[in-house]
Amino acid sequence: NIWFSVEARPCAGRLVQCACRPIQQGMYTSDDHPTILQSIPGIASIQAQVAALETECGYRQDATASGPDPKDRDNADAWVPRSPWMNRLTGVHPFNSEAPLSLLKEHGFLTPPTLHYVRNHGVVPKLSWHTHTIDISGLVHRPMKISMAELVRLPTVTIPVTLQCAGNRRKEQNLIEKGIGFHWGCAAASTSIWTGVPLRALLEYVGMKEKGEGANWINFDGPEGEVPLGDTKYGASHSREACMNPARPCMLAFLQNGQLLHPDHGYPVRLLMPGYIGGRMIKWVTTLSVTEHEGTNHYHIYDNRVFPKHITSKEEATKHQIWTDPAYTINDRNINSAIWSPAHCEKLPLSVETYEVSGYAYNGAGRPVNRVEVTLNGGRTWRPATILRFEQPSEYGMCYCWVHWRADVPTRALRACGEMAVRAWDDSQNCQPERPTWNLMGMMNNPWFRVKVHTVPGEDAIWFEHPTRVEPNLKHAWDLERLHLLPDRRLPSPGWMERQREMVAKAYSPHVLKDEPLDVDEGWERGVHHLAPATTESPRRKFTSHPEQGSEVLTPAVASSGGGGGSSSSSSSVQAKSRL
Image 1 (cartoon, rainbow, N blue to C red):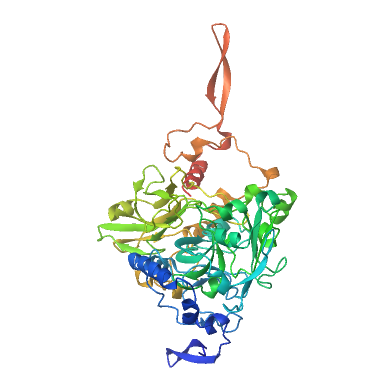
Image 2 (image 1 turned 120 degrees about the vertical axis):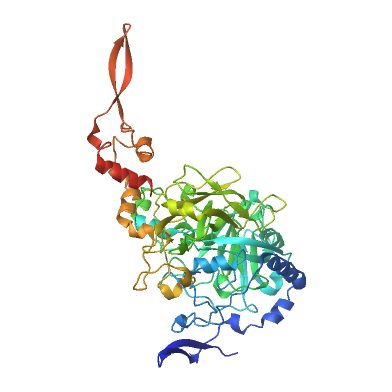
């Protein structure tokens, strides 16, 4: 099979497809998939299980991907099958991408591999099922290089799992202040059915030594040359307890939705840690070692951390000696939700009586999402949403997939509000925070997802404004026909956080501890000033002494308004800040 790079070129006012030079194929494209699949013990049962779940969930293949994307024709990934609709977030290469949010919504619970978000640090390795091995060493009784043929003869497990990048919704953080990560929108989450060998089974097979003998950590690395820093291998180190936990089906996965892994997702084998962030699930696993101490791979230490807000640079993190502090390590993801309908700049005629607001929510550690709520008034009241669950809890009560949610809202209520927001709760009654907390890597961003509502000038309609947008241009607007556009065919907004970037930065920007801003008028009263405008008392209360029956009694007196708590300029800035 010879693939060609195909590009669209203008010809007499229309686009025609022109075949370019042949593409040098990777092993994934030349390996015989049907023969490999038939060599996997129990494949018929596995694929029947996958097919049943796909039917139940209404799974649809990605019709937008028929081979390589012409954008890759001049780089080393020219052989990788990809959808041209994926939003590339770091230029053409390396391939870091998320699907248009409306397209992700359209595909429902299960995501096709070519629409699944991708985080690549470099070139996709050209690995073959037939020659790839995993070098297993360290504190094991049977060190070995295990082939794929030998690996798949071990027991397997098949389950749906949602993967999510720790940087999901990072652009919102970068608009407060640019951190050290690139922009992600809110589509860096996807769900597939994964089949693999449980780590428990593999580690028992190679004879992992006992904890008393020092076998405390399992280290996973990809191939050499994948990344530019450290030893050029992307790696992660996981505790023995996490890898051997029977309630968390950690595995070396080799099938995705019943087919061989897509190259962008780790062909031929990857680590899967359900509930963890994607950055801890190593793709193209090449080495596995069991050690006494936690691994020191560069990307395990210097990536995937949430530092305190006052750590504003890598140098600050080094000065405070917190790179290796486990208090800041990300493993399990946090609770989060987003609105995908209405879309950014979607127009809604007021003749429509009711609108179905909808989106997704997910949680980490196997904890289920128990509740999703929508507010139209800044949190004073919350409308319960209907949760659509596609996953049955495991025998241990664990859930590792996202849920979808929807709430029918009268259009007249949407017209009357200035903003709607969503938040999710888990089974411990933990919920998303109201406001963002900036961190240097822009990770785990999970405040209420807010969408603003505007009137369409000259029309009996309203339009909606998301906080951010990552599509490079209108050609990547999957739902273009539903959008409100300006007369010159431009979007009216890049997103409300970008439109109000200066105000967003003033409200949430970080400060190093030595520059800690202090304000005598700061307090609960300021945050609710717009809700009770008659209350002008400053949060700072001074006490004066009044003698009473021979004793001294302290009574509160209103502080001077030097901080501006009662001035009109302060009032407006407080109101703006409280509503961000």
